[in-house]
Length: 436
Ligand SMILES: NC(=O)c1ccc[n+]([C@@H]2O[C@H](COP(=O)([O-])OP(=O)(O)OC[C@H]3O[C@@H](n4cnc5c(N)ncnc54)[C@H](O)[C@@H]3O)[C@@H](O)[C@H]2O)c1
Ligand SMILES: O=P(O)(O)OC[C@H]1O[C@H](O[C@H]2[C@H](O)[C@@H](O)[C@@H](O)O[C@@H]2CO)[C@H](O)[C@@H](O)[C@@H]1O
Ligand SMILES: [Mn+2]
Image (cartoon, rainbow, N blue to C red; front, side):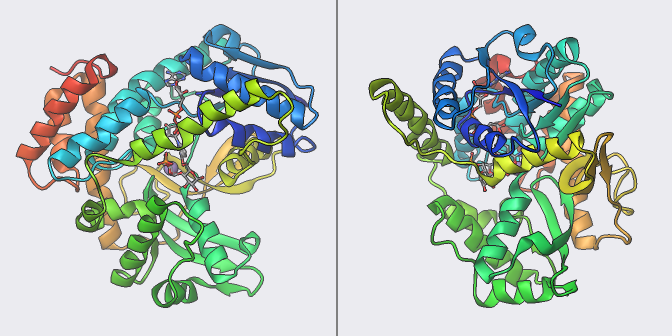
């Protein structure tokens, strides 16, 4: 079987890594055609130039189509890999800076920045799903688009039958960092993890090479040796330092690094500059690199190297597609409706858990016991605040959005919540639905 793949959000700087991973996996997952779909012609065209170069460089004669038309993008496709950023980096910058100007966390997917992005993303993403349902109702949609929990909940309400799998690469990065830091081989690991997206904990890691749970020694090593972060960008180095601090404070589990925004907003704020945030780093880094690469390819047709490579972000999504196609029941951390899988958490929460992936889709693995009250309490507040945001979206309700913002655990009082909400309404304009 040969697959037609469409990358929605084709202009993303993650596209080359995904395509190079597809090329690396041609034996297991042959490709008939690659399509890039975007709403931004310039970004999609830039990426077309880069991907065309990469295909030729690696000796592949795979047809490539770049299009802004949903009908062309989706008709006849087998898989859609989705990675759209509604509002682009310009709006991400505001998501980060508006809360920071009020002295609270400003972040892409967490806190009120994540909620601002969530409101935009639901609107754009449901439009995308509607197009895919029209032109390719049988295609699998493998989704990276953030904020994942909010997106998953909105799709569940609007398109309950869509063939969508929501995934986040963060747990893979955490596991890779642990393995690299302390010399483990993670191919032998069976990890037990639970939570919400960007809001969860490793309970144990069973290592088949020694036949036991190695979590106690991993926690000891994080506390006493610390992670190896020499090769990481400054932003990630700081993140993992705060993660070490979280492990020292709560040494029973390994937390998802994103919990730093809820447990240690104080430290995060010390490291935040309201005039230069992650969005600015990306503008000066990943996005500049796309433009420079295109210029390089156009100027010197004989160049042999560009700075892109197959990565774990690409490998994760390609592995999911392979597991669907080959019915291989591989295990992935995925974002799914709870439905009792975490026994003492509300049924209708959207949670992140290990799941098997096969030709039927996703089969979540239930926990055998309740989660601790500390985690449950944090999660319940987060679930309720995210649900209220999705309610606000579907009911056009200002009041529910205000309740959602007030309940978020990065927010010290309802007056700040209201000020930030009103500024976001102004800044987002038509990217948000109208709230009355
Ligand atoms: N789940 C994960 O673990 C994970 C990991 C990395 C990135 N992401 C998410 O992937 C997305 C892309 O991230 P990025 O940093 O590469 O963003 P980016 O802004 O560099 O690229 C996103 C692309 O999406 C396009 N786009 C925006 N709205 C669109 C729409 N309605 N239809 C089609 N295309 C549209 C943009 O024009 C842009 O080319 C974001 O949502 C990000 O949060 C998720
Ligand atoms: O600030 P960004 O846009 O660089 O990253 C935000 C995303 O961070 C996580 O994904 C990382 C991943 O953890 C890292 O190892 C590498 O593969 O890059 C990814 C994307 O940059 C997170 O899981 C995503 O949800 C965030 O969007
Ligand atoms: Mn993620």
